[in-house]
Image (cartoon, rainbow, N blue to C red; front, side):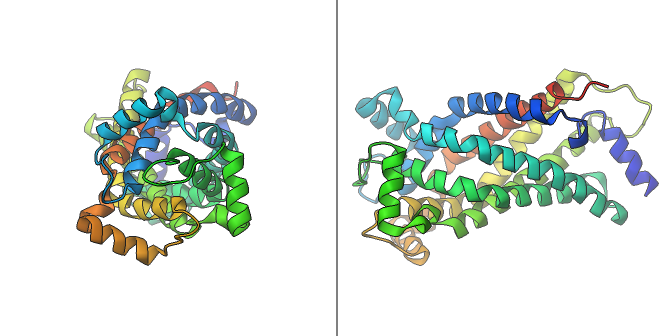
Length: 320
């Protein structure tokens, strides 16, 4: 137990825990920072979604042709279809996610501490539990936003309907399927995002500790704390590793979920039918449609998000 506590204290030089944060400042400043990250990376989500819902006869079969098509048809605004809806729902969803993540992480570390696992293993388990729990809490807000924004992303593409904004999508979905229509693919979303979040945060937490060991940190409580630049570099590397790992594992479920959420009301395919259609069109590789953009998206999102998140935590540390 003593050894475990020592390891946690050492790593504490590079990590800021929930109880050290000014919560009001954290939420207000965080809303601004994450809005900026969303603006920068949102077009990647649009391209990924279009690739995942493309039919066998669609001309745009890769990311570059999708981008060219969007720019030709709608210009740069086309890369931001559904953005207003996403940013409106993202703030409350992010508050729920981050609160659940940080509070659960503290509890999970306490839970695994008595087992005296290695530091990377402790971090993987605690961060994984926290990531999965936070994602499950946030899905209640994320899924309706996902359904609406994805329909806006693909409107007019490959036979999909046209809408007059997010409210029009919501109205038509509720008229056709009731409130449950906004939660179409909820089960798959939980099955996709919760494991994805668990894998992401587990990979991030454990890879950081492995990298710190490789750099020679973490063995002496009296050692000089690493520089801010070193901390940021290690966190960025952890974000890239986590994004790559999570995207490779969860893309098939994400493809199925996206297709279920954007299909027209008249078609209403089951998850089994979506699977059959994907295999019929492209074989098993059909499940990895949009892997390139998703791989880039999760790595870029992950690295940008974690750097913004860790910077936010440093910015919001309570004054002693």
